[in-house]
Length: 204
Image (tube, rainbow, N blue to C red; front, side, top):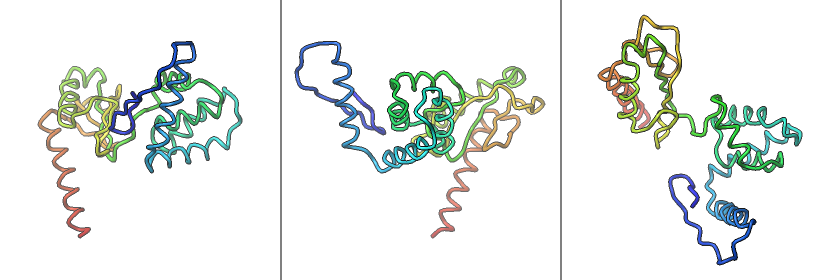
């Protein structure tokens, strides 16, 4: 099974005797199917990734700099970009994925239009930071490190933002918000909703 966007795709392969190359055989067919149903966004990702790769040599040591450049351009590292990088550097796809998931600087989900960062430093932890985090997770219906399906919000945590007297703190679009308890989470989201409605009315 391969997941393309929000749609799960099951691949039925022809019968073939089991051998050491079966995994590669299945992978080839999955990649072929992915190419057939590639979306406009996926095609754009591949094109932008290739432009960045053209600035680098085909050395394995370029992996992290390449990943940094691609994420800097796209905002995250989608599957299509990682496949392009692996092919360009002639390394296994799993090696690229392992590096991406090992370093916290890399993200696999696209950024939202609004970033939500819940502080879990010592002061915020003592003042209910995890309760605040749970409130954001319930309201947005996502977990930390994820983005809402409409890409309106992304949610993550930070260790400390240096605003301990305001604990518990949530950083909304790079602006620290103090005393963010569950009821204030609702207020922040309501303000975004009202602003979006206002902009919609003005654009009519």
